Length: 115
Image 1 (cartoon, rainbow, N blue to C red):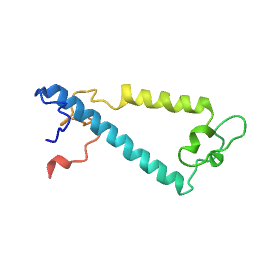
Image 2: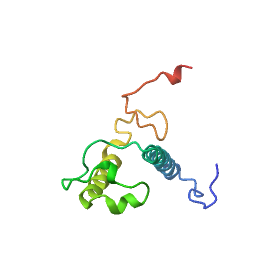
Image 3: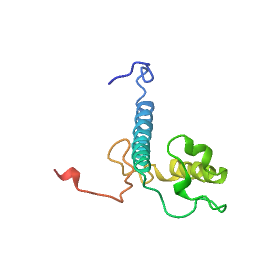
């Protein structure tokens, strides 16, 4: 495997598995972020208002400009939601994972292992 920084040069398999787990999880989040950016850039917006002051989702600009346009309470909700996902959802809770990064927790089985 490729380890130019020597993060697992000591041969600690638990550390290696943890780093692989984190890399897979954050890679999946990054892929979802790219899809969200492309959908938003295409002009697809949620209907309705984003805050009680009448600001609609369509009023929020694309890209990094959205950070200054979203109300502070909205940014806090996004951070809390990401924290809940990190701490409680995106984990191998049941211990049934077939490999590092398997977050299905016995809920999904598409039958890929039968090919």
